Structures are given as C-alpha cells and as structure tokens.
Image (cartoon, rainbow, N blue to C red; front, side, top):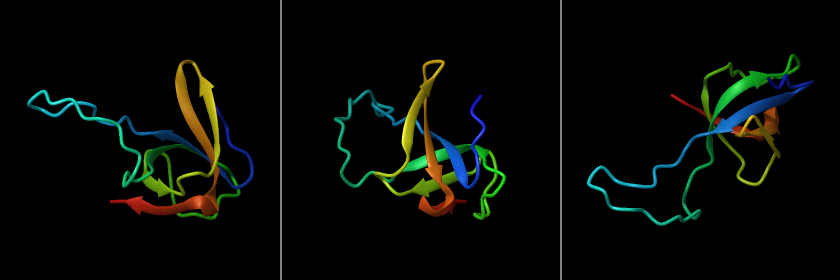
Length: 86
C-alpha cells in the first residue's frame, strides 16, 4: 500500500469503457476525456476537502505514475485536484 506524505494524494484512474452495451468497440481518443480518478489515500497535510473513495477530477498531465502489484496509481499534489465528482 502507498502512504502519501505531506500534501500528496494517491489516485487510481478509473477504467475506461472500451465497448458499448451493444458490442460496439470504441476507439481510444484522449481528447475531450476528463481525468477522473478515485482517491486511494490522502497525506496528513492535505488541505483539500477530500477523503478515500472520493471521485475527483485532476489536472491531466500532473502527478507521478507508479505501478504496484499490477495496478497503476498516480501520486499528485492536493492543489492539482480540480473538483470532487458528486
């Protein structure tokens, strides 16, 4: 498990749907896709009003990607989180 330090937050990017319910395969297009992820852990000095399991929108090209146990996480500063999805 990753434990973020200071103002960092650990995110897990949501899986993107590759196929529609009727079986149509969707092509990948990063344009117009929001950067949405689930909060896995929050650093003790984090000032953002977020908690574990919140869905958040974050700046697209920020953070550091880390792969552990075949799962990819993003470690990001709390100020790069733009919104909480409700």
